[in-house]
Amino acid sequence: MNRPLLFNLGIEEDLFHSVAAGLDGEIGDVDVRRFPDGETYIRFNVECAQRPTILACSLDRPDPKTLPLLFAADTLRDLGAANIGLVAPYLAYMRQDKRFHAGEGITSRYYAALLSRTFDWLVTVDPHLHRFHEMGQIYSIPARVAHAAPGVAHWIRDHVASPVLIGPDSESRQWVDDVAGRAGAPFVVLSKQRRGDRTVEISIPDIERYSDATPVLVDDIISTGQTMAATIHHLNQLGTAPPVCVGVHAIFAEGAEQALAPAATIATCNTVSHPSNQIDVTEPILEAIQTLNYGVRVKGQSKGPE
Ligand SMILES: O=P(O)(O)OC[C@H]1O[C@@H](O)[C@H](O)[C@@H]1O
Image (cartoon, rainbow, N blue to C red; front, side):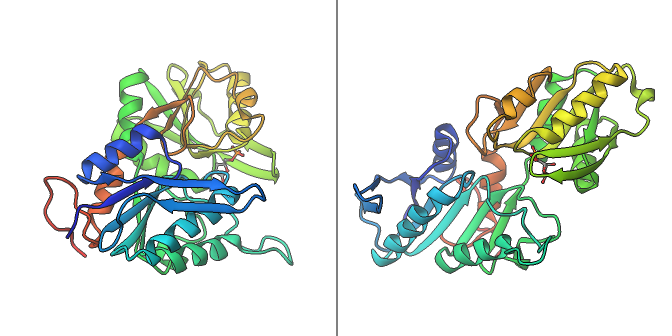
């Protein structure tokens, strides 16, 4: 099989280069721009026929990115690519996974159907799997999950003396448990009620027994920052040390930086490019790609299991 061809349609540049290097891939040149009327123009400036191809695109703020991404994949198909994979370190539309109110759309399903129609495979990092427990419940293509927990735990061990990990809600328990185990730290899980898009209420169990520890809030997504901000507020009232915030995906919707100003430190993974990025996810992405069988191999590794 030919060397894979990778195109960066919007992931953090260092992450893109290290994934490409790990796959011994060739970085391809593609022009994506808008015509004056706002429509998308795509041109691949490299021979794609018979090549395994990968489009890399982090799908935060997904709507303007999605149509060019789908057109790019369709173009590769037209040009005879052997197969087309998507590396989306952040995967969008995972949170509206049920009809919370009558008449709502279950956009998690619709978005998954769109991508599944167009790509042959998908790799993402810690998607927000809540009511769906496996990617196969909504994605009909092979969709692999890369796990940030080892890198997050490593960062905590290296940067925080005597941490106590705090998960913001019951959804986070499994993940926080995993990170805490790897970091060799205790953890507590809070109870959270979301009152609206930008309003959350947090209640904190008894954490007095960890009064000498540094609270480390860990969560998969920092969007409005309200979940972490509400937790920080309560911890401040309890007189704990200033908390450290660790998130996988640094969405940082408008106002989040301001909401999180009271945090001592904020560290995130490079799944969404942001100044707080400190944890690299190259390794788990390569490990996830290695489990697929589309002619894309991690350098120095033998064939994957599929
Ligand atoms: O509170 P913001 O930052 O808006 O949203 C992030 C939270 O919303 C949940 O779905 C995530 O798992 C995380 O706990």
